[in-house]
Image (cartoon, rainbow, N blue to C red; front, side, top):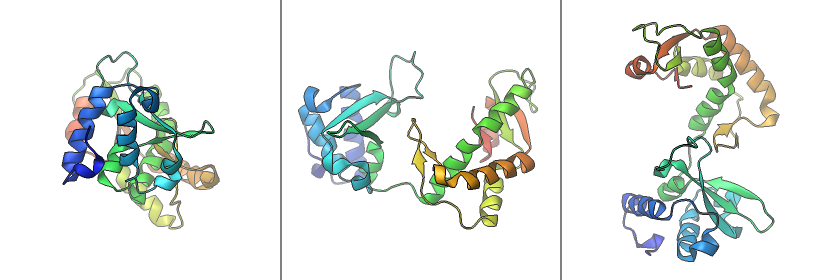
Length: 222
């Protein structure tokens, strides 16, 4: 097995790591079941920009799990279907992105904010879809795979709200799917965002195919 330091480019490192993940598959304990891979990924995780917060320096084991949102009936997993977890001696654990480690960079605050604001309105999106059950796509009339689409782009709504709230959160928590979400202390900001979205967003039903054709930042896939 090669060392993380062997590679001359990020692309070579990523390609080798992808092959290794496919070879290993799901694993409850790399330290016990594949010590060489354990040392490889421990070294890789040292490249994470937030390695101290992630507990990389003190980890005792690494596991590879099925990503929680992966269809449980899916038998052949893709690389994106695997989730890495670092384990500490006291039993605590945290997820970590091997791809972030390979790139050596972390998602910027703007990208984290985008995801947190999208996930915050997920309940409103579900409510809208439930209220429109049985309705056809507004563009082509199809009833297949209905999705909710923002007529006024989500990006525009987000940017307008943030402009009116310049003192917005810059730190985020993660949910069980390792997605960026707002922290409990930001509950008032979330409440105001939900009210703003409910008041200003106009949604419509589009089939998945039409929604993809629009190439619309405001599309919401649920």
